[in-house]
Length: 126
Image (cartoon, rainbow, N blue to C red):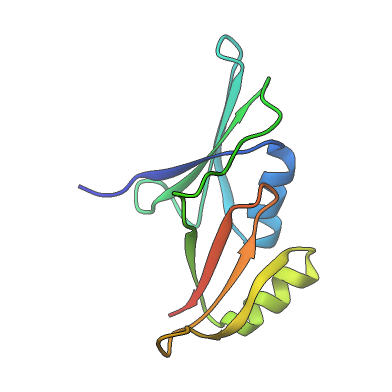
């Protein structure tokens, strides 16, 4: 068994695709419209789905807003250097919600940024 993908519902597919590709460096792996269901699915990732877990963005055409709820925590992405990743995200217009530094009760260096829909993304060094 392996984890195939994680799905997030997004308000504006174009803004979300730009964030995940231009700011976080993912590739758009595939995208398909489902006119009868009035939604679009876009799969992104850091490599082929046959070898890597993907992120599925679901855009429901007639839904303008979602409640993020309080059960979802965050996505986590491994980066070479958390400090440099935050600088690059800021340069591309991304929002850092927790500056890089050690974890509160440990030594792991981490930071958080936010996607256009408000989902939290944790950045962790190798």
